[in-house]
Amino acid sequence: MQQLKSRIEAVLFVTAKALTLEEIAVYLDKEPEEIEEALLELIMDYGSRDGALEIDDENGYILQVKEDYSDIVEKICPVDLSAAVLRTLLVIALKQPIRQTELVKLRSAAYEHVAELVEKGLVSKHKDKNGRSINLKTTSKFAEYFKLKGDTRALAQQLEKSLNDAS
Image 1 (cartoon, one colour):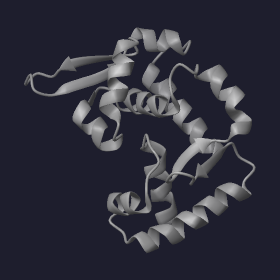
Image 2 (cartoon, rainbow, N blue to C red):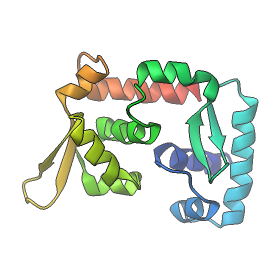
Image 3 (tube, rainbow, N blue to C red):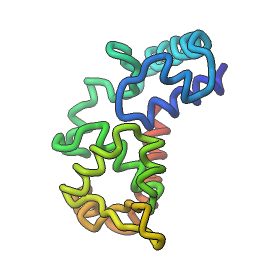
């Protein structure tokens, strides 16, 4: 059961929107009833921790930062980028260069997010050698925006580790 809960947690972490039981079941190739049981345990696990994350189930299921910690999130991630767009940006930073088609498999609303990130100058789009696929990577403005110095991929990995340690 723990492995299924971890897999559900991974799905919720990388998705940009609240998911139904059925959508999670499809992603994990499991029956919705099995997902529901593991998901309820996972919600209870998060509820019993004194952590900053929770699973909200009001309009589907989504992993989010608790309201009590929104002031910290706003200091780190200015509010002009939504949490969903920030998650997409994190995936790009961790996996760069990443094909846009691969990103869309990981983040369902990625096309809209990429458009916003390109518009803000945080991500660049380049066609690869075959001229058909679009590769994405962060820009120097990304590093400036988050006041980063050094290898942005290493810094993104540190951020991901910090997020995982907090949960």
